[in-house]
Image 1 (cartoon, rainbow, N blue to C red):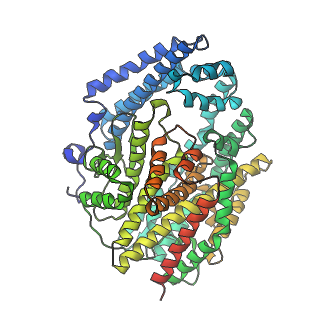
Image 2 (cartoon, helix red, strand yellow):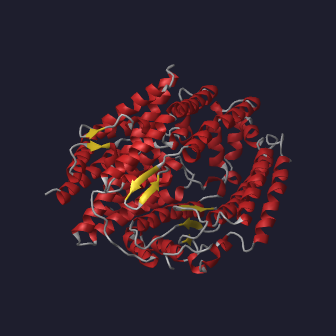
Length: 600
């Protein structure tokens, strides 16, 4: 494909597109399926008020529910993927809109089911679901029953739903303000004035020209300075919403509410922060190295993203990237690599950029059909090889989960989601590092891998600690003023970055720009995910058939176990600080490698 001209969607060859006929052969088939959703919803509603009558009645209702949800997932996936491939196509937008309206209406009609199911006498329900007829639904029901102590009356739940809808206003307003309304101005470059935005900001911070980095940084946070009171108020509103719901449901804290559904002990969160703190001297050593390599009198906040090594010129065609992945993932066995590579070369992937196509990359699919992957692959961007392996990890995880579980228990949690993808990235890194004799390439790979671990483990833990502290402040009665938020965040910056970093007056405004904070207690999962992935990658590559079988048991577990239990079966105990500590030791070894490679 000619990568210098971005084609229209209609001009993309079939070999470079994903094959959506695995979902529906024709649009007419999708239309028929969509029309079936309200019919199934009405059939399910006919069971309202009768679920407690008998085991057979409940079983029949659950079968209808599974059929409805599987069909909704399939039709929704088809519409979503069409929109992702070309958002400018009005027919695709129309399908997405019709699906959302249809699915939302069906969900509202069937909202009686879970509260009614939870109201059945627990002894009776336990007897019913112990029979083989309920094999496909037992775990799903058991997870619902575990949540029962925190489920309120139907009237109270309806009020909480209405409240949570208005509570989402903070997140929506933050997004509109920071992505649409805020004008960050321009940055002077050798090519002229270039626009500064949320998207281009990170690119400017990677620029080797320190003056460009400084100007971008100053203008970016200068704009946040103007809007600091509004954003602080929005964030306080979001935290208040978290705490309101937690207290309404009877949780001891907002953090407990966030971790309880996945059965993650709060000690996992605490162990993560403790382990990272104990290893902060190594992170400080990395920043001291960065100061030396950049040869600056003082290391500034706008100096932490500029690459430490020169870019290495590579060119891997899409097909060559697939072969790299095939070789790198050989420790997982032929079945895994053949399945993945056949999918990458077959109908799973939408490979290249086209006009109207969503940027970035993702893996998405349904219980049936392919585990689709969207890429915007570029042959001269080495990072895209890692991205292909990463998304392939997600897709294989989804494939094994779907093949090994009934529909109602095939979905794995976010806590587990980044493990299989990051596992693949680590194997690609090790393969490329071990198969090059070029010192510049080795330094480039090690530098980038070090930065990846830092961004995912250390930085996300700092964010997680900030969320914990801000919620604790409100729970103890302290309002989140701008000054409180800035002081809290600045102390964390100074702790994590260490003595070689000299911050600007506006540096603590970074805490006001992170969108993930509006989805509380989410970011810690990135840090635990990479820790688990690195531990499992080492275990599988250094082990034998038993270790590989354990890993495949994890890939196949889907939602059949809680995430910590699933990972423990694979060979990594996330309730222990050991996996995080091991990941931090790996980071230390990479820093030592960088010192050896880059210092005179």
